[in-house]
Amino acid sequence: MSRYENAKEIYAAYGVDTDEAIKKLCAMSVSMHCWQGDDVAGFEHEDSKLTGGGIMVTGNHPGRARNIKELWADLDKAFSVIPGNHRVALQAFYGDYGGKFVDRNEIEPCHFQSWIDWTAERGLKLDFNSTFFSHPKSGNYTLSSADKGIRDFWIEHAKRVRRITSYVGEAQGSPSSHNLWIHDGEKEVPIDRLGPRMRLKESLDEIFSEKLPSIKDAMEQKLFGIGSEAYVVGSNEFYFGYAAHNNLMVCFDTGHFHPTESVSDKISPALLFTKGVLLHVSRPIRWDSDHVTVMDDHVKRLMKELVRTNSLDRVDICTDFFDGTINRVGAWVVGMRSILKALLLAFLEPVELLRKYENEGRNFERLAMQEETKSLPYAAVWERFCEINNVPAGSQWVDEIAAYGDKIAAERG
Image (cartoon, rainbow, N blue to C red; front, side, top):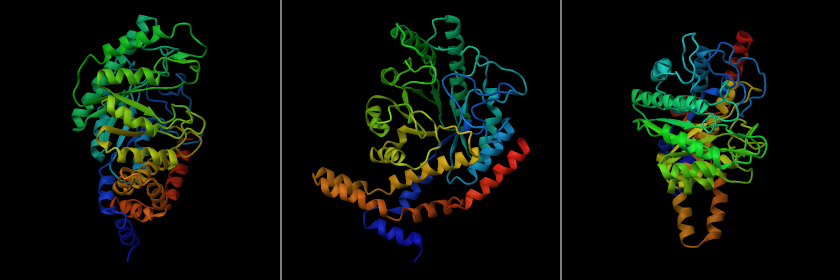
């Protein structure tokens, strides 16, 4: 009997169909963020690099993608060892500008046609994020700025990104998600907390007044950021209220809350009052430190909650980390495979049995069964999933990606 057939029998004793779990996992698409590959530099300038706006990439590992072709090559390599069919998430400043400078209030769908073509050839899909950082007009405030000229610039940027997102969604035959995050805030305690939030609300009202097809709009909160430690305009309470009131999605970045908060516990209330949830999954070792996602307890709880609430049709999952200290392609692969493993564990959980115990008040049995299922042979099911998708199941991919990293490091310096 094969390892998988043995695992199948063991799981069946708990009422779990492993074939069905694999089928569900094959149907999942995780959106892999492009900005891990180039340290969030973008393609606006030949010498682009991340500057300001409340985020920071650490490390100087050789081999960073310097242009769109190098980024495509790195994405291709990463996806070659990631099982399943997935998506790519772009920031708005990753357009194909043909060597010309195009400011963010001037971008058009044509600047992303090559991305549409590239993903279509590979069976991938695209998602988008407006980009409010690393720009001369970023400053401390963008959509909430007291300067109307600054606000208008960024309102126009967000409008154009939404139109591009909708255009892409129609072209690829799958709605594209658009996430809006601004870094607006103060390093020191402000006197006026209400004014910027009133201006942000007015800006969002104008941005979302245009109804577009093939787009899923989400807004991302933050507790604090670099340079906005004392006050963030777009707080969780602000965006949760706005999303609930305007039938939009809310984005939960797993690093944007107090370390003792559980993001998994935020899923169910969000599903009750908003259109849906966009997840940005990272690993906050020290709050929002954006380390590479691993299959830790936090991620496992998060994926189990999505399955237990039967909400995968209303939740989009995206990776969001940037580590410039290690092989960047390898970082993508570790993060994506970790999320998929956590999803598989969630699909293999005997939810109906656990729910039965809970409904009957048999809390000892519920606790004991959750502990016993931790030692079930999920790895054999993972191996079958990888086999179906023609990628290595174990560590065979590590040497391959390491060699690729050495190669591009030598070529790119």
